[in-house]
Length: 133
Image (tube, rainbow, N blue to C red; front, side):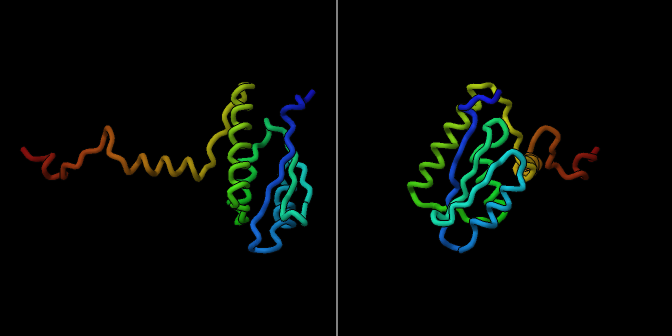
């Protein structure tokens, strides 16, 4: 039985420009497993329903932004979004859900940064000086 506290119903609001994002975004989200989608054209929004153990609003928002959609960035929407992100992360932490892995692109960024940083085996001494006897 699914815990009713883990079933979430949220609205993702899009910016005015470019127009026509709602149907495309709804179709894109519809392709994801375990996400129910409903278009709210009058509000420039997509209503999504999901289980918190499967998805988070942050994950869905980032998915859309990665696909090139423009979310509404008014102050009220940003504050609401940040509060929902925090509440969902806290709820997942409290139920002991495992942390979701970073997206591959984020992980590669950390690897690239680590490679650029001098560490353990790095020696700036020119090879001819190391061989000097």
